[in-house]
Image 1 (cartoon, helix red, strand yellow):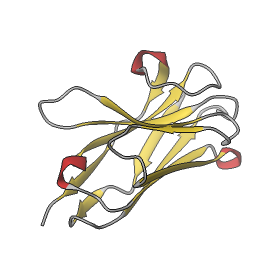
Image 2: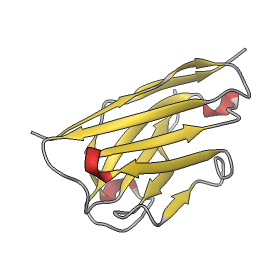
Image 3: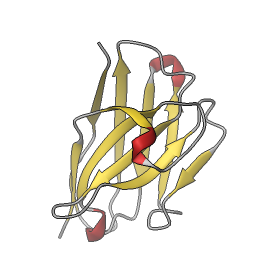
Length: 124
């Protein structure tokens, strides 16, 4: 049974940093793109970042470009999201997802497996 488990969320002050992790189990996803999405209360889920199967191609939402960095350790079936210079508008529940293919993409309908999410709250 496939399971994605996110961790690393929490409460942080504006300008602070967090590192999210997502560990996948049940099968290897070394040939699949993996991504982070987020959803704030009362808002639709939105794309944050994606990394392709090899880790050589990444893509970011404009709102996080230059502040967030996605990476992966395929041997450990793990994807990370380093978040720096956090802003109150980054407050949301962050979800890890595995795409149906190896290439990057931001459409959530192309993602087959999802975690339960980890809460990130940016507040002073």
